Image 1: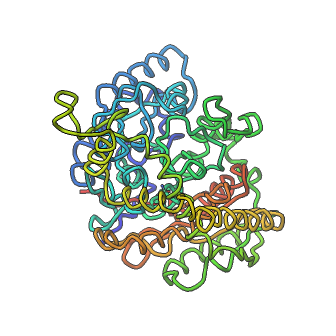
Image 2: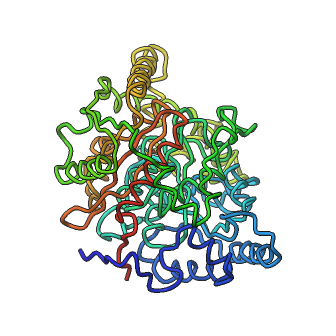
Length: 517
Ligand code: GLN
C-alpha cells in the first residue's frame, strides 16, 4: 500500500480543497462554482466506477445550481462561505425531485416531493448538491456492504470496506469527489467510516440538527452530521444546518446559543486561533473501558499518540471510568431493532417505492392485504433489514417487552448517567473510534455479530445523546487510516470542534490522502 504524502503541495488549484480554500478561490475570482463543479464531476466520472461512492450523480442539477451561485458571486451577492461549494449527500436524506433510495430496492425509483431541512438550509446557503452517496440499506451496517446496489471500496485500499453506514460519504471525501458531505449517525455511522477513510466527521448532539427528511432508522438515536476534510469545515457546515426546526420537535437550542463563528474569522484573525482554541485549561478523560481487550494494539498506539499531542498542547489528561459501557452493545441493538420494526412498517408495497403487486389484475396475484406486505417486503428488503425487523418485532411483542426493550431503556439511562457524571469532571473524552482499521470486503459480511461489535466505541454517544467526532490520527503499518474519537457533552460541539481544530493546527494527518488511479 503506497501512501502519497503530498498534502501541502496541491498538484492543481482544485486538489483537496476545503470549504475555506474553495471559498477563497471564489472570492478572489480565481475560479467559478461551475468550474469547481465540473472538476468534481470529472473526477467522479473518471474514478467512481471503481470506488462506487455515488448512487446518483445529479450533473445537470449541480451545474445549474453552480451557475446560479456564480451569478450571485459576480453581482456581489455571495451568501457566505458555502455559496458555490459542491457537496454530496448520503442517500437516506431526502432531496426533492431527485431519487432517494436509502440504498434499498424497496425505495428504488422513489422521488421525494420535498427536501430534508438540512438540504434546504445548505441550498439556502448556496451550496451545490452533486449527488447521492451509497450507504448500508437504511443505514443499517458498518461496512456499506448492506447496500442493495453496490459495494463501495475504501480509497486507501480498494480491497477493504470504507466503513459504514455512511461509507459512500467517507469514500467520496477521501477520493476528493466533493468538498464536504452529509452522513447520518445512529450508532457510529459518521465517525466509523470517517476513521476508516481518514476524514473528519461529526455526530452532533441529539436535537442539534433537524432530522426532518432523514429516512428514519432508530429515531431516538439518529442524527445527521457533516463529514469533511477538516474540523474547521465541519464547524462551518454545522453552523449552517443546526438549529430549531418546527418540523422536528426534538430539535432544541437555537442557533443563537451556538455561535461557532468560524466563518466570521478572516485569515488574519485565524492566526488568533492559538488563543481562541486555548487548550491550557482543557481536561481530557480517557475512559479505561475503551482501551481494554479487543482493541487492536496498533490502533491503541495511534490513539494514545494523538492524546499525547493534546498533552503537549497543554491539555490535562486523566483516566476515568464509564462503568456501564459493557451494556452499550446489547442496549443499543435492542433499542434500535425495536425502532426499526416500527419505522420500517411504512414500506408496505402501497405507500412508497417498490411493490411486488401490480395494480392491474390484483385478484389473480393476492388473496388478502397481508400478502401484499409479505410479498413486497420479502422481495425488496435486504437480509439485515429483515433480521432487524424480525428481532425488533419479537422483542416488542407481549410478554417480551419488559424483558428486552424496557430493560434496554434502563441500561440506556445508566449509560447516560455515566456520561453526565463524567462531564462534571472533564471537558472531553478521547477514545478509539473502531477497535480495528478498515477490514477486507467480505470479511464480516456473513457474521452479523462481529459486525455489531465494530460499533463498540461509538454507540454509547448515541444512547446518551451527546456529540462525538472522529479526526484523522495516523496510519497503521499497512497504511490504513485510524481516527481519534473525541466525545463532548450534549450541546458541547463548540468545545469539541475547537479541540479538533487545535489538533489539526498542530498535526497534518488530516491533509494526507490516497493516490487514486
Ligand atoms: N452499525 C450500526 C448499526 O447497524 C450503526 C449504524 C448507524 O450508525 N447508522 O446499527
